[in-house]
Amino acid sequence: MPNSRSCDQCYAHKKKCRFQDGSTSCGRCTRYSISCSMVRDQVRPGRPARPKALGPGGYVQVWRSGDGLHNKKKKTRVQQKLDPVPSSPSFTDALAMREAVIAKSTTTELGEHKSPRPPKIADFYAINDIFMIGPTFAPKFYHALEYTYGMAPDLLRDMFSAMETYLDCARRDPAAARQMDITEVTNSLRKLRATEITNENDGLAVMLLGQTLAAFDSFFASAGSMLILRHSLYLVKPWYSQLAQADFLDSVTITPLFWDIVWCLINREVPIIRPHIIRPQVADRIAGLCTSLIPVLYDLCTVSNQMASKPYQAGTNDLEDIERRVRAWQPDEDSLKSVEFTEIEILSMRAQASMYRSAALLLIHRLVHPISSQDGIAVSYANDIFEQRDDFFALCKPDTKLQYTSFPIFLALLEIPLRSRSIWKTMTRFPIRPANNDQIISLLKYVWEQRWNGFKGSLFELLGKGGQFISVI
Image (cartoon, rainbow, N blue to C red; front, top):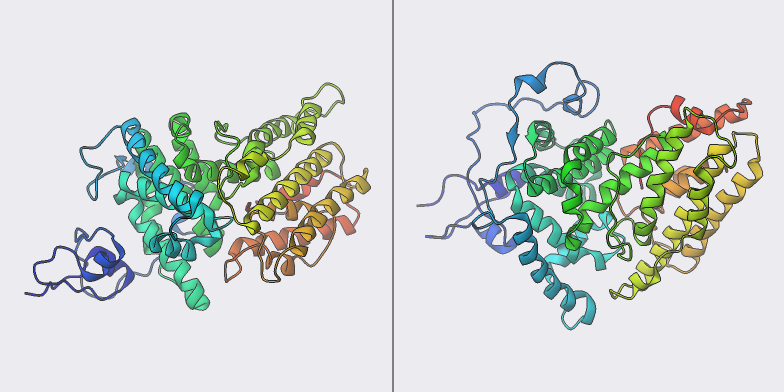
């Protein structure tokens, strides 16, 4: 007798669900090698309630508001009712098993290239290319997501489904993507709000959920990306040192710290977690060759935060030491030899590293010198950033994108007024302009209006008055 109910996966994606006689998995789940389950609650008939949008009055306010929800809802540990790892192995045992699998598959797919990349990896990159510098990073990122999802499917299922739907819709029908149903997103926000971490696996899942929610919000509404990200990092902080030990999880554990540090550089805040970069020679899917620069940027954040309340004095501040470290820093070229990267990936990572180094020096200069003081040096650093960008595009095809350089470009545009809207188009493979870009463009406009009207104070004072900066990396 045909199954009268769709499985959870087909239901979430509004696909037809067909079971063969005697089969426990539908045709679609079998084809994509995903778990086929029917454990969702039955929905009442009738018109569903209209989901609230992210933003003021929306669910993103769930832990910002003072409605006492924290006390009304009992915290729950991350559940593992669906697709659990067999016999619930410890984090250390599970890592050992997974690392053996990753090492074997990575050698075949990335090192020797004896066989083409598996179709599921190619499909994965086609959908998620905006989250990686290039396709060489896809296998490791895919396996890290696969492992993390296996640890806490109940926590991650809704957000994975929502992000997949949004990315697919953005490519096929951008207008529809802006109007998509975000019920699954709001459900994920509630889960993050109610989660209590009791072990490393829980912490890993929360770390991934936080950065995925923050990324979705930056694309869709840009209402609270950093609030979400920093909340998740605060929850994960006690478990981070153990998570940082696993190299195959770098693609999950490095990105949120990098994102938070960039935001703190602009807002003169202290990052939630001090990074433990055990493998600085590793090229990250987003940080690229800047992985080894992250600890220096963290220290720059802490010194900048201290300087916000204590005036700078030459020769008595740690800022000079950080500047020397930035000037001495060079990207680790050996990391490019460990994996067979494409030519474009290598050019992208080298350009990104050069631009971030120049951006750090520009930021250090502006911590000491307010607007109208030694502006020529600031413009020189900004020109370096644009020249490094131009050198990259001079070697690439016209449609090439240089992703994850928004922070250096933003700082450069604060010193040299250019048409920022045209520049952003060259910095992402995303088919529609993310919501946070509009906020960044508005902030740039505000800063230049103040500068042209004679403002001569600290650049960071303008950034603070211009509204909360929504960071992109």
